[in-house]
Length: 128
Image (cartoon, rainbow, N blue to C red):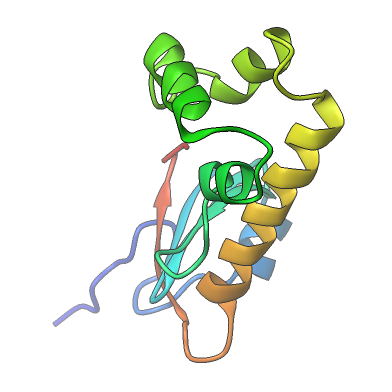
């Protein structure tokens, strides 16, 4: 009987972030407590149900109102460049967007890759 093959890994082998970075992989590293997205081996996004998203950081922090965030999502769609819209419309500077994006990414990656949350598999080609 052969071992099951995980997407992006050898039979019976769970991929590691280090190995995926070395092979310049693109896709989603699925972990127990979240997902880390890679493009050409570089982390470009992370999400975890226990970490606040960028919308939470911007609205709870008082930088944007919840209505401003909803308007931006409504105009661009959930995956359609909300951040770029907020910068282009003058609601945020490029620096504010980058700082909040990195804060959300690092928080989510911390939980997704942290103690007690190991990688379960890799979905090659998945994008955020």
